[in-house]
Image (cartoon, rainbow, N blue to C red; front, side, top):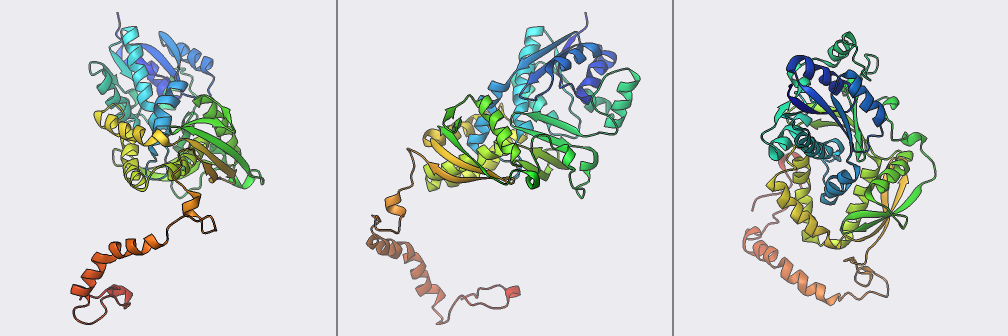
Length: 417
């Protein structure tokens, strides 16, 4: 009896070729596992294609709710944005796919899992490291990484064997999508000088062609998690799907960046994430009201660490557990509503309220309702400025001359005492 492998099957070029390659080159019986994270594909067609190519079994599993509740929303609560521009849609889906691959491998008695990653990308690391953490006994097979065929060669290889694939030489873009976002790469996009053509976008209207009238939406949060739109409570999947449509219509969520891959290569990537960017901006606005200054400072310093952890495939680690515990603690009082204005590619917070807000009108106002004790400021300033004053007297002014002078900008704007 042939050994069995569970392949993460997307229905795309790489994994379609992988089914036949695993059979012909490695002698495996292939169980094709398609995991629905909100890909909006014809899952029945994907399942049928896997069987047509030669899989012994084709399975489809719904992972949308798990994805939103245990992966996307925790990343949102952490404020995770990779290199300031990428909300990690593809990256945050990989650990869940790896977990479900391992689960099905156990169910099917498989000795290996397989994926369609190349040897140049980040996903190979995410799948491999997650699998090693969850099931170190399973073999990991990566056909594309091993046979090293280009996309053009894969298309030719598939055509010679009658393997139905969705890519053609005329349309070489590689896309990946889930509820949290959509990525587009390859083809002419590999030239960073070339502007992305409008045809590559599927979720967002061009901001130039989006409605002239803004749309405002109220997003409710409970302990940092989005729970409602315009006072209508929704499960996470419905909320994200709805907001993807609303924000996408207003051209929100496009990113064109050159990012640093984990393996050291810079890569030009295009992303669409209408709901994710809207929720990120809303969540950040609510945190500004409900977290103290030191909490915000520390949490902001850890945002990049959390984003790097996701990007680098280290979700199933003790380090992540430690960071997640801190993030969860910070979200205890991040409850309230943020009113977002969606307009011409921008999602901007224009109103926010919270029963746990640290903002006090009586302390902040300059009007008659001001309850701040202005006399207290003088004592505070005297204490705060005491070390500055003492150093100026004893050191900086000891020679009787001003220590800080404007001079030649090439020489700096300070003068040593």
